[in-house]
Image 1: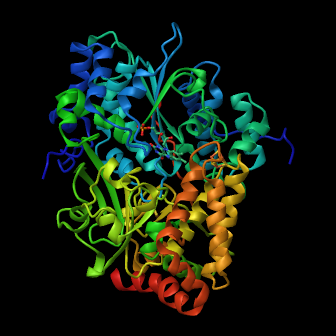
Image 2: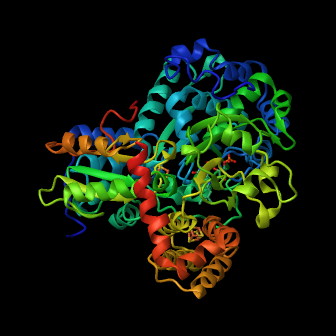
Image 3: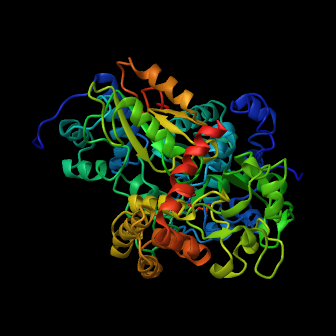
Length: 449
Length: 181
Ligand SMILES: Cc1cc2nc3c(=O)[nH]c(=O)nc-3n(C[C@H](O)[C@H](O)[C@H](O)COP(=O)(O)O)c2cc1C
Ligand code: SF4
Ligand code: FES
């Protein structure tokens, strides 16, 4: 196995606490940055590392940082996106729960690079028990001189505050997050202006994911080049994957990018294979928003190459035969899973979470949920499948924020790859209902546990 | 209920609220709205009445409507009374794949209520919710601050039993959650 960068010390007893974290080399990146580097030099290392945003979009972090506007006398902010609400994703929670000081350390080092005197960690409201853990870690960091005024005698001042959300997936979208942080409804803003120019309180702001900010720690410690040497091509470094669904060992895995999907699913050290040794049917590789792929296409690309866990390989073939790495929320379905019902849970989710500003998203998600429900209940028609296709096409690209696309892609890909299953629901509703909808959940719940 | 009717929180709660307001820059106190609503709700039997929201508006010096429109946007704010024990079961993909529907059906049967309802004795409210970021330990549910993961029917029964006689509301947070300065 390759070296872990984020989870290296995750099993050390007491690593949640400051003393143990520090004894394992914690806060070295802050020391190094503050004492031996300029802010620009830190940005330079992050650029060299090739680190890409781990929140879903994969935008190069160093580039994002270099876009930050720096007008005289205007405060700049770093905001950590810990809203983690994309179905299938639970890696940020894992990091914050088990090694909270890593995020705090990353926040301080990153804020130094960006010249931010104040930063906020926006945590989804359901995670109050995580907020408790973070607050304790922050208090320890203040006590030990890593936060507050004149940190370690460097002249750099920094304060970190945790801010709770209150149950709204849309607040993970960066401009909705900023609205929410300002005490408003989570309605995404129209871009431009981008947060780098006009973000929190109209000030220049960088919004980064928990895992992205945490990755800054090993990058500063070991240098950007060392980080870039890990991984494959433009997918540098390690990635946390949240694995769930029908696998033997669900959980969070830190993998080097470039690992084959097959090894990830079947290796005993990772997911351990399909639950009850059933057959793999489909995978949603990067959180609910990315296209679902059938077993053949997730294991191998259309040209027959092994599919790798990397931004490029997962996207190989475009949406016709590929998908996206997204947030790394890897949901596995075995042969008994109903693609149609799974899609229904996604579509209901997007309908529930649409902020309602754009009519294609607000109305389209509502209709898609209703139609899927009708099909599941055995009342669908073939033209309903075509209607679903039509609606998703009309949402895609026609909305203020990417939630619209995120709602459209799962529908498009499910129909693209599994149309016969939709048709079976229409043509033979009774059988479908028995086999894959009700019984399936029933069997699972009673057999496994 | 009118926009002027308000209540007072305990001195301790009001002090905590002032402390939280201090986290945001001068002139940006409205930022404290979500944390203040959370604290207000936890102090008010788990839901936000109009007078409670009016008091939050007063504290932040904003219009009541600015509070209502926010409170109604977010799913964790309850604008009607909920049972002492609010059970929120995740129903999204990964949990559904691992049997969440059965967990919901089981709770419905045990409590004699449907998704979204409160039991006649006011003790339990059942809600299905979207992904709680705990998909690897599915199926799961949340009661107050606590996540309950890798659920089995036995575990669910035990949880119902444990909560049958609670007189305290299951709140998402308490006064010790936030760091104060
Ligand atoms: C609907 C929607 C939900 C999102 N949810 C999250 C989230 O929960 N966490 C996150 O880090 N990014 C989320 N994003 C991406 C953010 O908008 C933003 O790109 C990200 O926080 C940037 O950080 P990164 O560059 O470090 O990935 C979401 C985007 C959309 C459109
Ligand atoms: S696409 Fe949907 S979630 Fe995004 S702004 Fe429009 S209505 Fe809101
Ligand atoms: S799908 Fe249930 S916690 Fe994510």
